Image: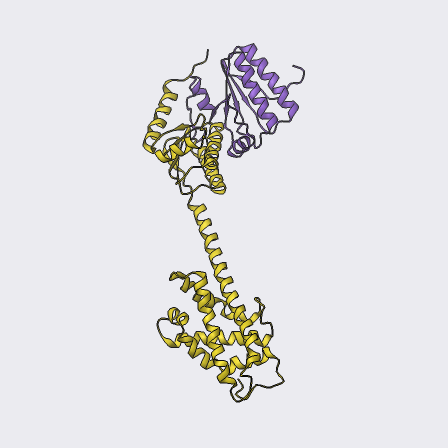
Length: 131
Length: 294
């Protein structure tokens, strides 16, 4: 880990959560890829959730990085779920022909966690927020 | 309006203008009896005469301006609205562009017929030198009519296209986190783009996990439409929502196969009801059967 990406990889008891806030330069993306793969290996997690709801743009490089993270995590026995992609980002990726076939997707973090059998119970707040 | 003989010093457009003004009443009376005016002004003949007067006056203005073949001549402006109304009324009653054009052409003949009468005793040539500018003027009038008709049609087409785009795509929330889009009519690139954007926005808004694209109202599916549908499905999947395409009629299924289109891994169902069943099943499975860690 020569160049930490400064994006935290949270360990929620065997489930890893990465939330990308703000645009990611190419070198930071590469660093993140390294961080995440290391974290998966060291924690032995079976699930990885990547939240990109804050991203307004995903270029072909970042898309490839995400696909590679998923592929290498799979080699380490962890399943990756991409969460919260915005419509404009989805349309752009599809127009670029990057449909990310190997990646699982979910609408919200709660839902992705439910997909792993981890239920994040509601502890207040309004219904429509995050469902 | 001068009642005297045409001044020999007048150039032919001016002479034409003077002639039109002088004979305005007779021309209007004659025109009012032509099928064009009779058909448009069905209530009273006076209305037709009045309208004819307006047209004659504006033709005289154009002639006085000397620009007989200028479509943009200011003289045409006052009657443009009336010409639109008249040609519109004729084409609404089922006449083709050519037929309407011919009816307007008849106006010229009515005026030409009057020329020898007007000029009798004043000009031994019987007003021959007015024939050419007169023909030019009426030719221009016909072009103006045709132009306004085409413009009118163009506006109708544009308006309808806009309406079609607007009514295209209501996204319906069918159930908690389940949305559907009933697609009606031909899908072109612009419409599919709107459909896609609306659906994806609705997925975000309702946190939908399943979306149904119903194409019962889509008459034909070609490779372009199929491609648009696939793109929509792929985008929805990237956002974390499963898509199912329903309402595929047998004929459309056959077309898709014959075109060799590969709908790939897209889930399809015959009817909206089947798709709804699939969607509910899908939700149940997600809740019942998560893929646990470890």
